[in-house]
Image 1: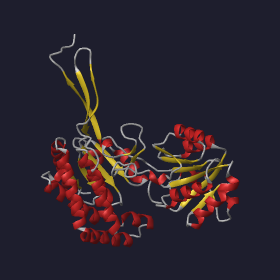
Image 2: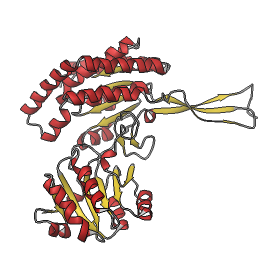
Image 3: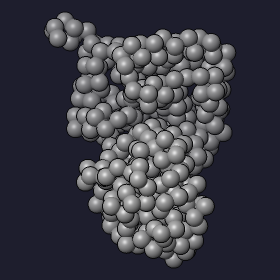
Length: 425
């Protein structure tokens, strides 16, 4: 890379950073009605420009097909009429959320008369680095705006045209509401070096980075970032079928958790079946999956349940397939399932299917993942499904934000102390 090129890119990224910091200071004080007006304008622009967004997406799809991207990646990239409407609707869902900024989380008075309040404030400038899903452009932009944060978005090279078309709609909404267009900026270059700048060269501008993508992207971000990161590395999610599970419910949940959408981080990757119900539950669940086009890789007991099952290797228990493949094993009850998840899981999302309330509570309390479910599909691991509007991702971190990262998780707090002349003795 030439020095001139380096210099030009550095100037470009610093320009984005300075503009974002200036926009963040405006946004921090912007009333909820004005932010909502910008979001409503963005949703309206997306609907009005459906044809242009679709045409931009067709260009991205044609290039992706020429590069022989996998079917799963093409599906993540594709925007049909239903998905474009879904993007507009998810922005409207963010409008209906309460504005967290300025809310008082707690308030108390000290014996010396000082009144102390803990008040919600924005994080500042959020950098979002994501891969093929163009809808992240709208979701991330909307969530950052609602939570009073300026955003610098760096989408994947495969979704360049789609992301640009969606970003234009966000800018139209901002301008119509009288807010700076620079509240939501899209990095205008596909140069991979731009990601390096965001990770290590923009510490004076960026307050936090959120990666949204595959394992290699998130690992790179966590390794190289010089600012705090909110993100998850993998979604190795489990469904455990307990001996007291209703067989029809178990079949429905296992099939949905794996096959509804195989490419999302909440898709089940491992099926655990209690030996206490293997004789009745295992074969029908495995058959459902195989008949739906899912490859099943199982231990010896699972292989005996259906001749189509392939043998599982040790690596399979660790794998996030993001594809129509599931690893399956029979375990000796709920504690063995909990131990398996602790050893092989990624602390993302796990579900137990059982009619036994005590067993369910044991699982929900002892499994240390961001999301634990009882008698429900892991595919509900989603901010929209949690009533949080949209989400910027699912965090498997232990601190700041955990689980779906929505509007409230993109805020921090400050302490506001009011006195009447007190001095400390």
